[in-house]
Length: 306
Image (cartoon, rainbow, N blue to C red; front, top):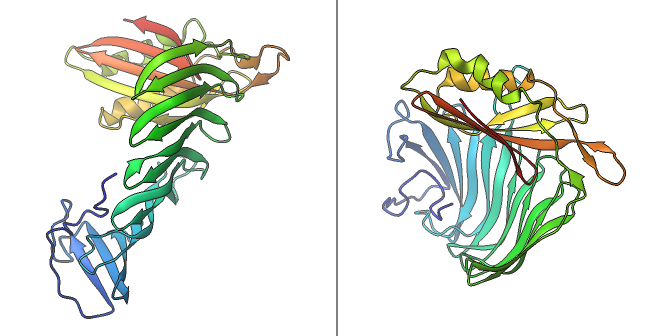
């Protein structure tokens, strides 16, 4: 994320503003335009000579970013910033809410302290710590919903150092990596107490058969989907990460994931307790050739080419 927060060319924009509050209308590339041509607008308010707040909205008046600057030209971010994003619309949720995707602070134009990324359900996705605009301190990555930490380690001036831990959905460390100057010098894998979910034998064939009619020799795509594998082995809550591919293909894949054959659910080895797991599905199409890769929590499970 760049220090220049909004899609405005604040570094080149030289305004002489004497009012307490003013509004800027912007094109898609951040150039000042009239209100009719605008794709964004920003409301700037003077709090004091060294405190200027700025709030960016789209043309539907949905908040995109808000933060505080030290100057009226908005070149020196200073204080807390919130970055917003909208949930994806679904049949069950046709009116998605706007949520804070990332929050963190600047000090005299430099990132400082704790920065946090969130999932749409407001649970944490990623935690970083900064000092003088560089990653310094604890870093953690989290699974979806209420899953515990999945990765933990420390940065020193943007470089990974010391022990980095990979954790299963039960919170148990299954891999430890020792890093020096950002390079792995030692790796230790330990057996996890989680038995991963397994796809049904006909899962890959089911997906390929159902999307064949959308694939030609000229078709190329790389689509990633995450979803929850329930205790009953059903695939639910799919989320697609590559929306640049064919909308029809993406829509069809999301439908197929939810109607796919039942998986063997994940379970705890000692207690045999079945638990929810995560599936990561990657579909690559290269000139009509399909390849499907499946992973669950912490390992590659399945690959099928057709």
